[in-house]
Length: 89
Image 1 (cartoon, rainbow, N blue to C red):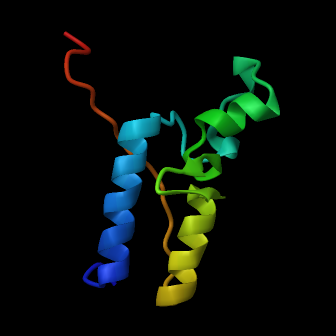
Image 2: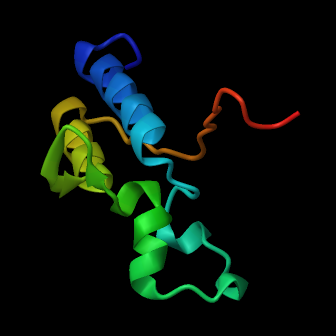
Image 3: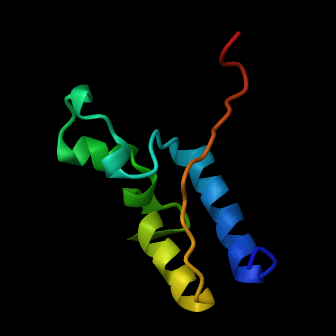
């Protein structure tokens, strides 16, 4: 699976999206309820609910479903890390 061109391109595209849009959680369900955010605010910070950087007519989650349809593999985004130059210590 990891060697298919579609999967490799998906990974690159999502990495670019994470870099550009800085989501904080994978999905809305991952956002803690004690943060007091509205549903819209939760969608804005959840990766799978954000409009996809390369095609704003779909969400990252919809782009993922397209990949699953093409490959027939159950691909799941479980976590991600984002590093920013100049932040931290």
